[in-house]
Length: 616
Ligand SMILES: Cc1cc2nc3c(=O)[nH]c(=O)nc-3n(C[C@H](O)[C@H](O)[C@H](O)COP(=O)(O)OP(=O)(O)OC[C@H]3O[C@@H](n4cnc5c(N)ncnc54)[C@H](O)[C@@H]3O)c2cc1C
Image 1 (cartoon, rainbow, N blue to C red):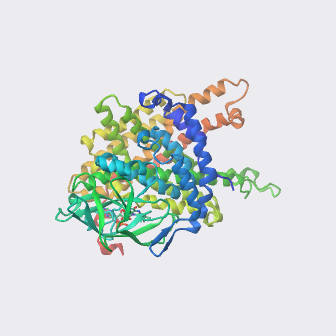
Image 2: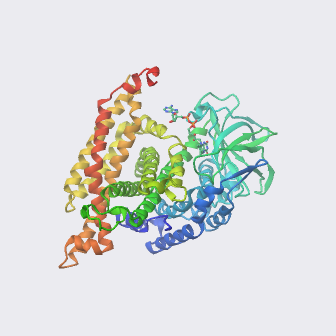
Image 3: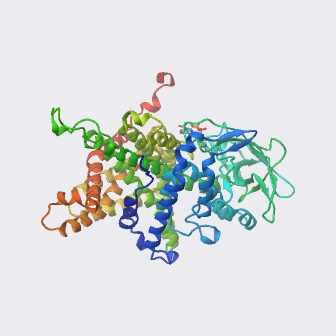
C-alpha cells in the first residue's frame, strides 16, 4: 500500500505561492531563515514521518493502551519514534529557541506538522500536549515555575495534559467540584475526580505536568470561582530534581471508537493522601488562563481535522486510480470494453472533487489563520498586532468546528470511494474516520464552538472585527477581477460574502432579542456557512495565484493547445486543477450555502417551539 502522509506540492503552493511566506522571511524576527532551509526541514519531517512514525499508526491502533495495577502502558512501537520526535526538536517548532523551541513561523510549523500528524496524530499528541501546558506557564507562571517546568515541557521531555472535565462538568466546565485548600507552605492540596483525560497517565515520559481546574475553598460558584493549578505526577523539588510521586493517579481508562493509542483516563486527586499543586497565575483566573491554552488547542484540533482529511483524500485518490471496476461510460454497451480505474467514473470524480476542494480549502484556511500569529509577532504597532489577534479570535471557533466536521466528512467520503473495502479495517479510511470523529467532540463540541462564534465573536468591537474579516475576502475578490477568467467567480463570491454579512447581522441582532433561542438554534448552520464562504475565499485566492502561472506555461509552449499542455505537463495540470476546483466549489457547492443562509434568514422557529413530547 502506498505511504501517504502529506501532499508536498500543495503544501509548497500554499506556503510560497498563496501565502507568500518569503515576504514574511524578510522580517527581522526570521533573519537567517530562508526557503532552502524550510524545504530541507520539510524533507526531514517527511523522512521522520514516513520511516519512523507511519509504521506505528495501524499497529498502535490495534495494540491500543493497557491498564494494569494502576499503570498505563502505551503501544510498544511508540517508544522509539516518541524519543526521536523529542530529540529532533519537533515539539515546539514556533517557540523561542532559548526556551527549547525552534523559532520558526507558525505557518511553516503547520507545514512540518502535516508530516508528523499525517503519519500518526495519536503518537504526536504525547509530545505535543506538554507544549500547551508549557505555554500557560510561560504566560502566567512565576519565574520559579518557568525555571522548573518550561524547557522540559517545550522540549517534550515531560508530558502535559489538561484536566477540566468531571462527570457533571463537561461543556459546563463551571459546574466542576474539584477543590483546593491552601497549605502553610503556599502549595495547595487538591481533591476531586476528573474524567476523559487524554494521556492522563502513560509510560512515555518520566514526569507528567497536569494543569488542573479546581475551586479554592470558599470561592464563588460557576466559572468565576475557578483557579488553575500545576499538579506534577512526580513532585519537582526546588532544584529541579524529582521528588516523591504526587497523589494524582489514573483509576481507569475508557474503551473508545478511535484514538486507541491514546489513553483516556479517569483521574483521582488526593484519594490516598495529599495531592499537591501550585497555583498558576492568580486565584479565580483559572478559566481565563485555561482559555488561552484552550483557544490554541482548539485551533490545533481543527488543524488535526484537516490533516486527517488530507490523508484520507490521498488514500481515496490513490485507490481510485488503481481500482479497476466497470467500463467507461463512453464505451456504451461494448462487451469487449476493458474495465477502467474508478477515477474515470463521473460519480467517483464527484466525490474526489468534493474532497479535493475541501482539503485544499482547509489547508489554505488553517495556514492563513496560523500565519496571523506570525504577522502579529512582526507587527509594527500595537493596533496592528491587536487586529491580527482579533482575526485569530474570530476565526478560531470556525477552524475548530468546521475543519473537524468537514474533516470527518472527507474521511467518510474516502470510505465511500473504497466501496466495501472502505468498511474493512485493513484499509486506512476506516481508522482515519474513527480517529477524526473525536475532533468534533473534545476541546468544546461543535455546538459550543458555534455558540462562541455567535455569542462572543460576532459582536467583537460591535461587529467591526467581523466586518474587517469580510473586508479581507473582498481584497481577494478584487485581485480575482484582475485575473483572466475569474471575473464570474469573483462576482459569485462577492454575492455570497454580502449574504454572509446580511445573515450575520440578522442572527447577531436576533441573539440580542427575545428570540435568542431561535438565533442559537441556527448558530451551527451559521458557523458552517461562514466556513463554506471561507473555503470559497481560499479556493478563489488559490486560483488567483495559479491562473497567471498557467498562462505563463501555456504562453511559453507554442503550437499546443492549453488542454494538450495540461495533459502532459504536471505543473500546468496542478494550476489548471486550482482553477477548476475553485470553479467547482463556487459554481456547484456554494449555492447550497446560499440556501443554508436563506434558511437562517427565514428563521423558522420549529426547533425551539416544538414540545419536548413531540420529539417522540
Ligand atoms: C476521547 C476524549 C478525550 C478527551 N480529552 C479530554 C482532556 O484531555 N481533558 C478534559 O478536560 N476533557 C477531555 N475530554 C472531555 C471533552 O472535552 C468533553 O467530552 C466535551 O467537552 C463534552 O462534554 P460532555 O462529554 O460532558 O458532553 P455534554 O457537555 O453533556 O454535551 C452533550 C451534548 O450537548 C451539547 N451541549 C451541552 N451544553 C450545551 C449548551 N449549553 N448549549 C448547547 N449545547 C450544549 C453538546 O454540544 C453535546 O452535543 C475528552 C473527551 C473524549 C471523548
